[in-house]
Amino acid sequence: KEIPSIPAGQAYDAFNMFATLVSKADLEDESRFKASILKEMDELGSFDGVSGKITFSIEHKATFPLSIFIIIDCKITPL
Image 1 (cartoon, rainbow, N blue to C red):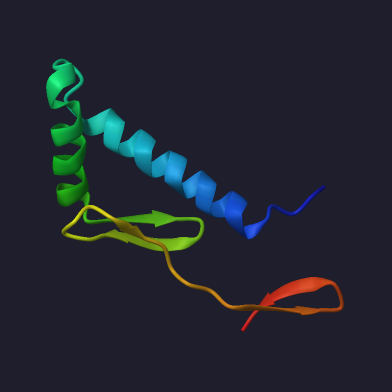
Image 2 (image 1 turned 135 degrees about the vertical axis):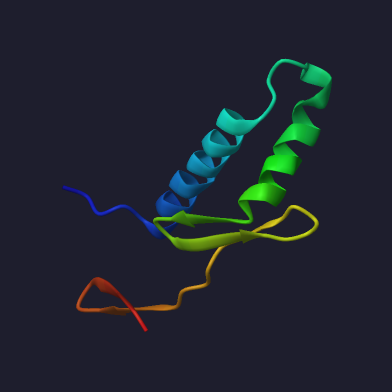
């Protein structure tokens, strides 16, 4: 069994965030889809993912937690 990489966890979180936002957004009016997604981001505020708590800025940018790791005996270990 292969252990997922760090970017795999971030990709997983990004997909799940998008799926959560889409599930709550107004899909009836295609012209309002982007505005509806942004509104849902404002209301959600943050998202708890496998990589940690992801927050949304006022400019609607997602901020993922920063982690620093060290490799010891071929194993990735958080500092």
